[in-house]
Length: 283
Image 1 (cartoon, rainbow, N blue to C red):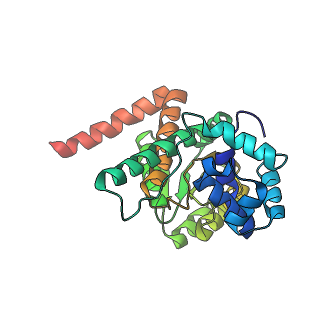
Image 2 (cartoon, rainbow, N blue to C red):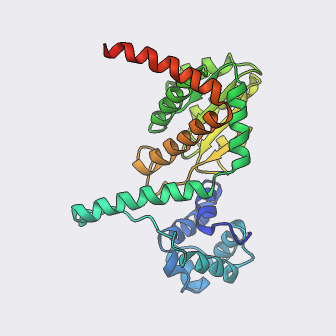
C-alpha cells in the first residue's frame, strides 16, 4: 500500500469481503490499534481466536507484505493527529462522556469520508447527474434519509429526481430507466439486497449507475459505474446511527455544491424559481 493510504480505512472498507476469521482480526485491530502495535503475531492470533496463518493472510489482503510491515503502517497512523478511534457508548458512561463519544464519532466519520473521497469519481458523478433526463435514487432503512435529502437538493437545482424507499417501487423505477438516465443507490454496508438489485436493474436498463457506500468491496460497489465512498465503522455505527447518516448527508452537500459550481447559471435560475414558489406559502 502507498504511504498516504490509511491502513485503518483500508481495513474498514474491506471488512465485508474478508473471511470470518479475518473479520475477527479486522474488528480487533479497528477497536484496539494502539495495543496491536505492541503484540506479536501469536499474541494477536490468540486475542482474536484465530491462527497465525489467518493473521498473515489478513495482512496481505489489506495491502501489506506481512505482519511486521502491517505493524509499521499501523504505528505510523496511530501517531497521526487524526487517528481518533471510534469508542462504544457503554451504560457506565456519564452523559458528558456519552456526548463526547457521539461527537467524536461524527467528527471522525467526516474526516475519514474526506480521506476516501475520489475527486475524479465525484466529477464523473456530477457530469452524469447534470446530463441526466431523470435521476432515480434507491435506499432502504437509515439511508432513506440521505436519499430524500438528495432528491430535495437535486430538485431545488432543477434536476428531475425521485427517491424510492419501497423495494417494489425501486424495481419498477429501475426497470423503466434508459441510457439518458442515472440511478443512484445509497447503502452504508453496500449489501442491502433490494438496493443492490434495484441498481442492477437500472444498469440493465442502460442507465449510468452511481453508488454511495462505505465499502469498496461490497456488492453494490461491484454494480455501480461510479463509486462514491463515505466512511464509518459499522460494528459501532449502524445504518441509522448519526455518524453514518451525517457522512452520507455531507457527501450529498458536496454533490449539491459541486453542481452549483459546474452549472451556476442553471442552478441559480432553478433556485430562484423554487424559492419564489416556496415564498408564496408564507404569505
